[in-house]
Image (cartoon, rainbow, N blue to C red):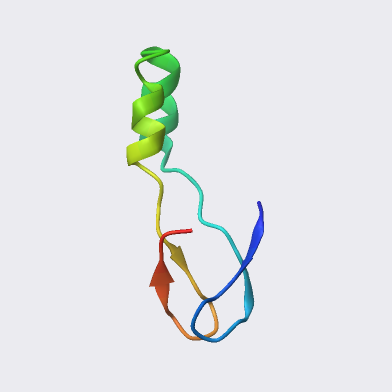
Length: 55
């Protein structure tokens, strides 16, 4: 996982991943299923301050 900096408190946190369903759909319906990966990314949440953003 990639590390990103929180825009609110500048703490380094890990980037959120993909839900399992988006990975399964992208594999089963390849190449159209790749759109599920674009739409389904989880928002990143800072463990220090709790701020949530799309990273």
